[in-house]
Image (cartoon, rainbow, N blue to C red):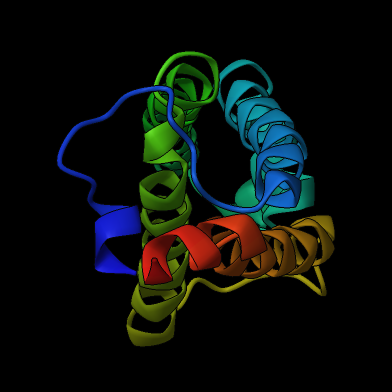
Length: 156
């Protein structure tokens, strides 16, 4: 399994289940959409999707939150762009991209447990994140799974 996540070379030779490739496409669309909205519609994302009561902050505090959220959106966009590159040119990277997306997501959740942010109600981002984590787990499992034809070849 580790050879699937970290192959000796990144090429277009994808050996996982085809469904993982198809699941990767909506994941990339979600991640790109989330990142672009974080960059270009930051104030609304912070208020509605993240549920942060930015209206109660001082103007300097609100500007800081908006700036940090924009920077985080840029980081998200660059990681998603790497995923697009993997999908188009280096498909052997797909399992690694699933791992990176999952580690990034779980690390952010852990940080928010350690250093929580006060939020107002349940944000709409919560439901999107639940769908995203489900797709990521399913995609990772499928991407490292050996195809039935590969099992036979590996045993011979």
